[in-house]
Length: 127
Image 1: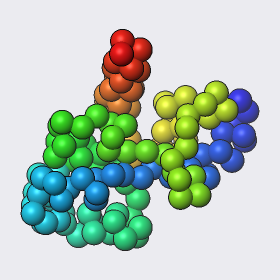
Image 2 (image 1 turned 90 degrees about the vertical axis):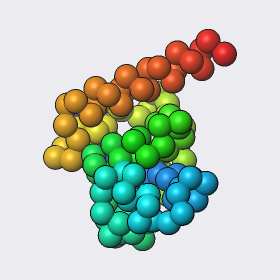
Image 3 (image 1 turned 45 degrees about the horizontal axis):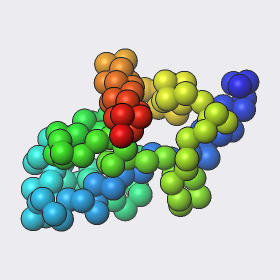
């Protein structure tokens, strides 16, 4: 895939979360969720309203607040308001994150997410 093709694809994609659907099962309110995630309630509200993008702290916080859920259950890539099935037409995770979030995600988080993705794939293959 050419870099210009990758930019075109990634500019149409957005990382979204199911945290706002899941939190009501475990937490009483956004403030309690924010405490569990280790981020401010204001930031969570802004993500919920679409005024802020999901960043590294949000991802790490969601993983801490919902350890019983895997990454696929917490986050998904959205294109025009619906989940996208990952195919060979899309860039690999590392390539996508480096282009889409060049300053937000560090190497350690990318490695951790890649490991979680690989574990998920192995679990699905084992089933």
